[in-house]
Length: 231
Image (cartoon, rainbow, N blue to C red; front, side):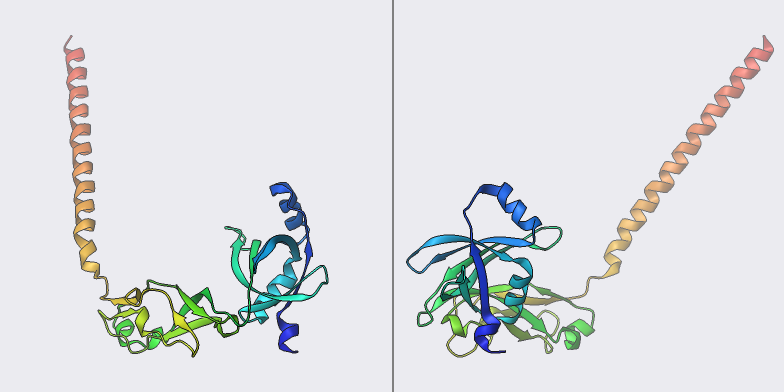
């Protein structure tokens, strides 16, 4: 399959008609969207949900968009909205681009080699602080994602965005000093023991107080019974 076939996305134009119409589209297996930019008017469209998933899975950063079987134009994904429960795509925004002009884009950063990191093996906690960074590149040079190898990290190590290696033609816009990941010391269980002991003491004290109160009530009841017998 050629690149153009892999990145082609055919959609149908639509008239924006509010949320009720959008819900009807989704129930029929289609996803509403809009394309804008490039000095042209925004155009609303809808696309088959399955075809959209396939196009996004097989394409790079650029899609060849065809509206109503017309001529194609290069676009990039600007925003994709998912349902908070099902994860299904509910809306998509596309941006028209020129392939000879750099643009800003958001790229996911993936950490690899975490199981091999000495700090992790010693029980340290690896936390990815920054999961996406902003870059600038030509649309055809935008990577699907960036990887950072954490297999050498020790406890108390901190990695910043500056440490990321990006492909040629790509520049990082995100602050170089932004924290990408940290490897913290293991959380000691001994810190929790005083709390557990305190809870145990409180329960024991509560049970003792309840026992004393019950004993007092029984003694009062017996005294009352004896007084009644004396009468």
